[in-house]
Structure formats: structure tokens, C-alpha cells
Amino acid sequence: MFVIILMVFFGRNFIFLFIAIGAVEWLTTARIARGQTLSLRQREFVEAAVCMGFSRARILLRHIIPNMFSIIIIYATLTVPRVMLLEAFLSFLGLGVQPPMSSWGLLIREGVETMEEYPWLLLSPGLLFSLTLFALNAFGDGLRDALDPRIARD
Image 1 (cartoon, one colour):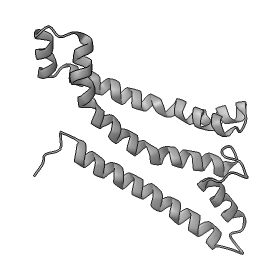
Image 2: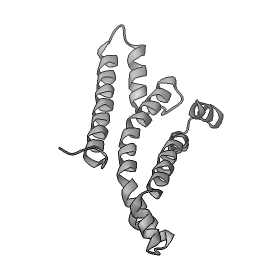
Image 3: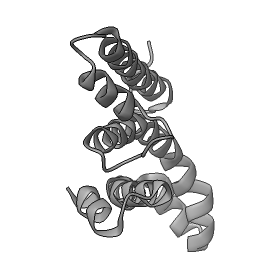
Image 4: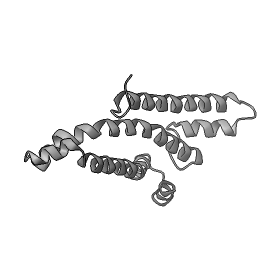
């Protein structure tokens, strides 16, 4: 809703669209990073580093960031399909990417306009967009399975 309000208020600029989406989407990533940092701060290896007298910067660079890197990478790969869907939705409504540029949302909107005469102009971009989103979600799930240290390895 916030992105739609920004796009209506500031206009339909391609660059501003991605700035607005980024301004909204970074909040969840920041919350996940903060929660992960607070969780790692209570772990034994961080307490041991504190007891050994390491500086906060060294603890952050050597212990906290490497342990939360995989979580952030996994979350980023799972965020990409959501951002793509948001951009396509805004373009479908006419608030996102404008012609002559192309977007999944524009292709689907043009397919809806000619659906009765040329149904494949709606079906092909819709199916391919769905397949792309499913593939990216599957990639994110596979990456999570490969990188998440909390998953038991058989």
C-alpha cells in the first residue's frame, strides 16, 4: 500500500519504483538481521570471545557476521519473487513500468485486454511468470536447506 501511495504521489518513474520497493522491503530484512544478531549475541562462542577480551569490532567481524551471512542470503533469495510479484502487480495496475519498457505485469495486462481474441497473449506470460516465481522459490528453499546450520544433516 505504501509503494502505491508513493507511486501515485511522486509519479511513475522507473527508478523511483525500485527505490520505493527497496524502501519498503528492507524493513523486514533489517528485522531479521537484528533478530539474528540478538540471538547470536547470547551464544557461547560470543561469550567466550568477550571473556578472552576481543574487541566488539572483532567479535562482530569474526563471529556474528559470518554466522548470520547464510540467513541473510537465504532471505534475500526468498525476497526476490515477492519483489517481482509486487513490481508486476504495480505494472499491471499502470503504476509501475510504463511502455515502451516491458514487464511481466504489462504483458499480462495487454493479454487481459486481448483475451477474447488472442488468449495465448494472456496465458503464456501468466504461466511463464508463475513458473519463474515457483523456480525462484524452489531455489531459495534449496539454498536454505543447503546453508542453514540448524537443519540436521543425514
